[in-house]
Image 1 (tube, helix red, strand yellow):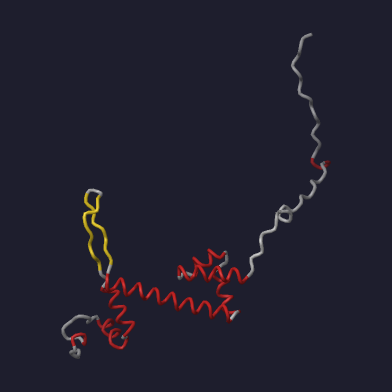
Image 2 (cartoon, helix red, strand yellow; image 1 turned 60 degrees about the vertical axis):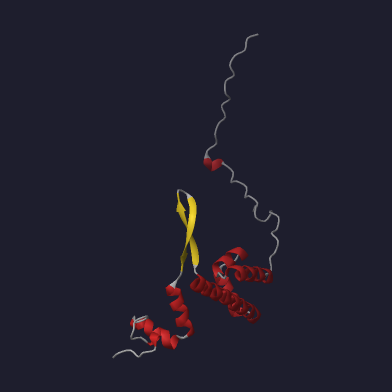
Length: 165
């Protein structure tokens, strides 16, 4: 008995107009397991916890899974949330001020490299930051000097002498 190559079976292709409409597919989203429902209070608590650490509304909103606009809607709608956020904002401002004072007075060090090895450090201080702090604490005295550009000259009130007309 000899075998012959099997010929492919020809199947007539029906025209499109005779095809049946495809069955509507079931909605796959409806049949997925339900996500845990996260309450508004849980999202607000998550937002405030991240804001306490970062002092950034954008970073806190991203971590809490909300948009920054939602945070502002919560501020407008809830006085309790507004009070909690205001208190956190005051704390964050205090921490930022402490860091600014530390940088202005103590400065920071940058490493010096020689042949890919650290051979020393260079201290850096920010005079502009120091002037900014003085302007914030005594605006009546320092804001005028900054506008005039006379900070540190001999005839400025810094040295106790009045400006010349």
